[in-house]
Amino acid sequence: MFVTKTNCQTDKMRPQAPSTHRSLWLGLWVLIVRLRFFLVLLAVLLLVGYWHVLGNYWRRLTGSGPVAERSISLDTEYWCPMCPGVVSDWPGKCPVCNMALVRRKKGEASPLPDGVLARMQFSPYRVQLAGIRTASVEYRPLLREVVLVGLAESPNSAFTAAMRAEVFAADLQFVHEGQSIAAESDSLPGHIPFQGRVTRIEANSVRIEINDPDHELRPGTLVTARAQAPIMRLAWWQRAVIEEWRNESAVDLAMHALLSPAIPTVSGGVRSLLSEARTQAVLAAGWGSAVPCSAVIDHGSLKVVFVETGPGMFDAVEIMIGPRCGDFYPVLRGVSVGQRVAAAGAFLLDAEMWLNHGLAATYFGATRGASEPSPPTPSTTSSSPSVEDKLLAAKQKICPVTGQPLDSMGGPVRLIVEGRIVFVCCKGCEEPLRKEPDKYLSRLSSTK
Image (cartoon, rainbow, N blue to C red; front, top):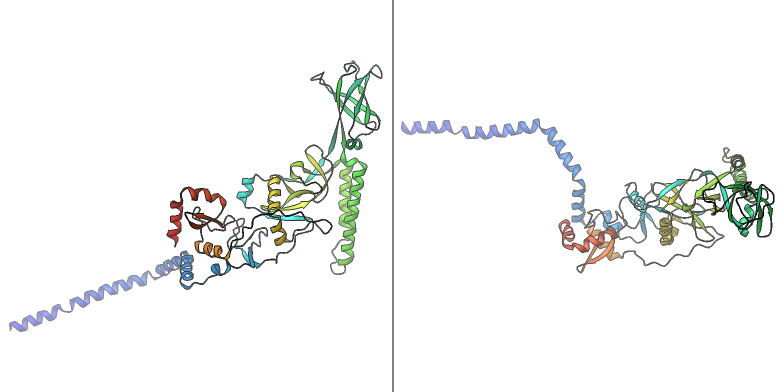
């Protein structure tokens, strides 16, 4: 009886263990079923957030991927379709619009328009760092001032004084008989300028009559007279404008004759006629299109301005200008009213153009035209990385100083630090790297 009772109690206690485990699994399953949507959403978010990390691990394990293959290609380059001036030997993103650079073969770039010497693209940071400021080409009243210095002579009458002044040959074209002048003398400081006029023009001098009813200008007094001539009303300038209009009209009519059968909307000289009518109206008022003097770079026979054609993009354009009028130059050819040119920082752009002129001509087909030889390209040391350096840079990937990709600031720049080849994104990172090599080189070790 005792044995039987013990067996009965044992049989009653055995089912309790399986029942507990079954309840736990059942509860866990119910929890998973209820939270299945949240778990799936969490998995998707983790996959999207770490997709680039998983991709890097996959390329590292399989040894495949576009970066390792494309970065060592010597016959290809990478450019930005939105910012054509951005060209790099390395894949990456455009520093201006942050768009991924597109691969192409070298020499596939389309040529620049005629008259454009080079095209350069700068990031907003570089534009601000260089202090580049633009100004609009606009109509202005352009007056050429001629300074005439001479000695007062014996008065011609009771109310006037005479003066004879020497004139430079280049300034004779801006002086004519009957022209009004304003005269002053250092012997009469603060005196209101005397009014007068040009009475006679001789070989290299002019005769001036000055209104002096009080006889303040005594004979022998040094007098400075200033005469102003509106450039737009000079006969030779008007002839130059008309000649330029004739050339433009000839091109317009030729395009109409060639394209009108295929494109009926092409105007047959109407555009040039309207443009000339506007120009003549402005000339009659003594106004003309002008650019700031600071925007013009003078290379002797070549005058250049940098026209802004996009955000941070500048085209070096050859222009034809007239004599300086104050702080502006009148423009005959090259730019039109409404365009913006670099008025501050033009010398920095010019230096960049000459340093990289050969590169711009190769990539963009920049020319000065068939009638003039191209400017000589200064000899510079080639900075193209070797295949071995490209492989090392592709393996390093990031700059140890900034943590950004090596091509983010125009790099990579090759350095030797503590006997080790290291690449940085720009020359500005060289100094901090050499000062604290252990600090920055440890970052490269941690990324391997």
